Amino acid sequence: MDKVKIVALKESVLEDNNQDAQNLRDELQSRGICLLNLMSSPGSGKTTTLLALNKAFAGRLRWGVMEADIDSAVDAQAIQDAGIPAVQLHTGGMCHLDADMTRQGIAALGMENAELIVLENIGNLVCPAEFDTGAAINMTILSVPEGDDKPAKYPLMYETCDILVVNKIDTLPVFDFDKARVERDARIRNPKIEIFYISAKTGEGVQVLADTLVSKVKEWILK
Amino acid sequence: MDKVKIVALKESVLEDNNQDAQNLRDELQSRGICLLNLMSSPGSGKTTTLLALNKAFAGRLRWGVMEADIDSAVDAQAIQDAGIPAVQLHTGGMCHLDADMTRQGIAALGMENAELIVLENIGNLVCPAEFDTGAAINMTILSVPEGDDKPAKYPLMYETCDILVVNKIDTLPVFDFDKARVERDARIRNPKIEIFYISAKTGEGVQVLADTLVSKVKEWILK
Image (cartoon, rainbow over the protein chains, first blue to last red):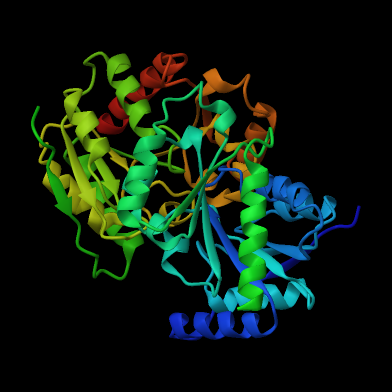
């Protein structure tokens, strides 16, 4: 297997990230590319979820992945080894990506014909939620072992996201996790949030999420 | 039960956090107070670990807890309900605490006779590791469900910490988690790091950790 490409991102010099993010979103739409920004705590299962989605996409999307990390290339390597175009982005200690860093990543991925590009953001529930990356879809994963109090504690993440994926539901019998509390606290912040329950490990629930994403991507591209 | 005190922290105006942190550390030592900075991902079990430690301390330490969060007061309330003096610190969206914010928290806690004050930092493996809070002991928790790749992915956290607590070891049979990998990757970054395995839920391993902390606090106070 080939070694994955690693790109060191440069810090942005632009002052107005919101404007820059809107420009990137418009540019991507005109190129027929839907950008999905995937955020979560460390260890919620972002990469495993992407691998499970790849199977469930079943070739319906041309897609690629940008893996952002402080260090290491384990995630991008795992994605690339599954046959998905991938690039590893190193942020040099930065705790989030902004639109300009995302743009550097898209250029490095170099997939002109992609319909979907996923940015796997730094594992962090705080800072990534504060920076618009230019994504058309913002999605967060909450894994059952993290506990049901996360929407109450990290409200901006849930306000920002269109989709909440509750992962590792195969471990529900092992942990005290109140689904109703999660749904209530997330919807207080964001009444429109769509919630899916999956186990990326066993595959439970993944097909429904994959079908929804395929629809949303096609809809965005045709908009 | 009484409602817990909530304090909104002000952002620091000081430019040199490292110097300010050293000043705070010296001041606390002269007052006979050991500050422990507890860091981890969201949902690793920081609060549950503190509750388990309280039982295992068995009255050997006068101690209190500062719970830092973006929002909510669930953690400080749980600590206070267990009979431990506690204060909830709200960071107003900030992803970490620096020394000056920690100083504000200590003042709000108002425990002149404390031997140990624990700062439960924002759940975040990135930013809190970058800011010296003035703590005498830095401790991080990695929970088994988060996975064994965290020391490779978030190196600064493990470089910064004196103690690594691997929590939720009761779930080891449910997850693929390679202890040897964690120990190797953590020690590459920090050969001196002390590693403990516990389940805050079942109590396994907590006594050894509690005894170690009691010794370290007494040693620091007498230094």
